[in-house]
Image (cartoon, rainbow, N blue to C red; front, top):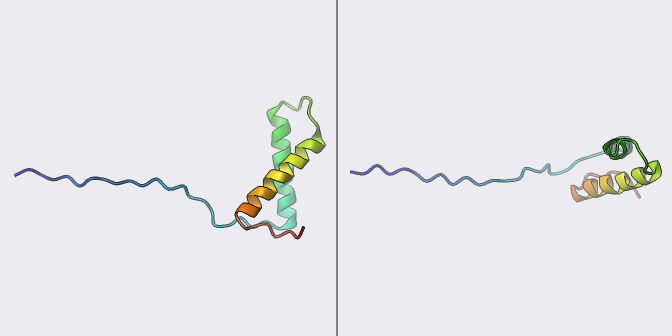
Length: 74
């Protein structure tokens, strides 16, 4: 009698939070950190701090709106 081994069906799921809530203060802090990391990545050489901020703001707002967590009125 041959032993039957159950086949393992592993499903890989990406876990994503249902929403990321951010107060206006938290949103600003997230933008500040993202802008800082952009400057840090290039070794704080060259670049434009305002451009870093604006790009970070766009990225954070996209993140918050895609998860339904942007509580700021625009």
